[in-house]
Structures are given as C-alpha cells and as structure tokens.
Length: 335
Image (tube, rainbow, N blue to C red; front, side):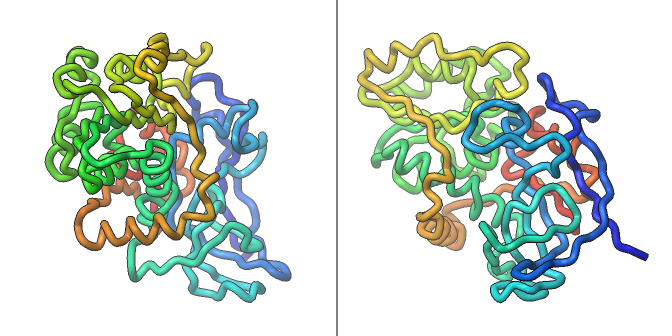
C-alpha cells in the first residue's frame, strides 16, 4: 500500500479571522527523494503570528502562500531517505518544510540540529526565529544600553518573553505587557521582569505612567494598535521604538490603524524602526551561541506551549495565537 502524506493547503484568501474553510485538508502520495535531495518525516511544526501575513496577497518581505499550496511553516523533520551528501537517515533537520507529514528538500535553507542538546521545539523557539528576532531586534535595532527602561508588548509570547529576559541580562529595568493575570504573574515571577501590565484590565496609559516614571528608552512592539499608541506617549529622550509585529491588526478587515501619537518621536527626538530577522541571517550562529549559553546558565527560561496532535490539528492550533491562548513558543508536536 502506498504511504500517504497529510497536508494543509491554502484554499482561499482569508478576510479577517482565518476560517476553517480557508484551509484544504489534502492527502498526497509520499514523495521519494531525487538526486541531491533528502526526504523526512515531520516531527514538530512552528506556529507564528507572522504566518497570518503570508496568507494575504499583498507586497511583503516574502511572497504570499499561493492558493492550493502547502502552508508555509518552519519545522523539524527526521530524515528517512537521502540522496544528498550532507544529510543521512536519522538526522534531525530544521527548515521551512511546510505543514505536512512528510517533506522532500534539496537542502537549501536546511540545517542539521542536535536534539541531544535541546529539544526540537527549542530550535523553533529560543534557538530559532523567535530567539533571533528578540536578540537582533533588541540589541541591534533597539541599540540597548545598560540601565535603560525597556517595555515589551506581547511579553508572554515567543519573542517577547526572550526580549524581556535579554534586557534583564543586560542590566535594564523591564516592564512587560500581556493579557491576563496568569501571564503577568509569569513575567514578574519565573521570567524576572520588574513589572507587568495586564492590557485587559485598567488604563494602560496610567499604568505606564506609574511604572516608567523616567520614560521608556526602548519599546519593543509586537502588537501595534492602541498599545503602541499608549507607549508613544511615554518615550524618553532619544528613545527607540522597535517594530517587530502588530498582531492586533493582522485580522483587520479595515485598514491598519496607525499611531496617532507619532509626533512624540519628534518631540522626544526618538526613532521608530521596523526590521525583518532574515536580514541578520549571516549572524544567526552568533546569536544562537549566546542564547544557548544564557539558557545553559539559567539566565533565560525557555517557555514553550506544545500541542500534541496531527497535521489536521493545525488550523485550530493556529487560532490559539490570536486568542492569546499560548504562553511562549507555540508548536504542534506530531510525535
């Protein structure tokens, strides 16, 4: 009997929140590797807010996922067969292999990992794109200096949780913004943030005034919208606003809401800069080595939200990102 490959493909361009009917649950034959290729079984799939933007047919830093194409996703696969000199059966490989049970690759953009040193999920989180994003966004784009005040939104997510911990390592005061008392308690407890703001409760601007009496030196933004606007009112002189994402805007059916308080950048002689982590690809090894060291000595606590299931569980698991259900890096573990 021919083995089958369960896949999630894009069936339609979403309008607003992604609906179940926007996905196609497809079955294809398992492909064999050709010359210069290897094949593998998917072990863990990464789920990230940026994936929502890949579904829209508009200019971006990556082309959109095409209708009928396998959903783009980072994942870890275990090599099952190979005609590629760099990969052998049994190797654990990190790459963009998509939401499917089996994948074939020519090795471009793929990297062997050692799961005896860290779980596969961690290579998709703290040692993967979220960790790289936090590291370069805070230290390079944010130009962090010791003793500064850092505020990060989406602070209990995959990127925000690492941003805050790196800022503490670098000797800064850190305020995290998250949704719900449990997440806020995690930030100030296990993760060592100095303070946390529950955006679902109370006046965010008032809380920022109370918790940043000398202003915000670096604001690391993962959510956009009203929270970005509130942070702009608290900028210190020569502050840096790092635009990483805007999850509050991704499911909009109306135009994205831009900041109305942008003139604070002029008054405070501040700057606001967006970035894409792929621009730092040549330096990933540098960041991964330092983050791994911080994890090893206990200065970074890795938070992962692992959902065990199959490929067909991807659409519902994906919605967790936009409901705020996950704490830390969200992954789908296929076992």
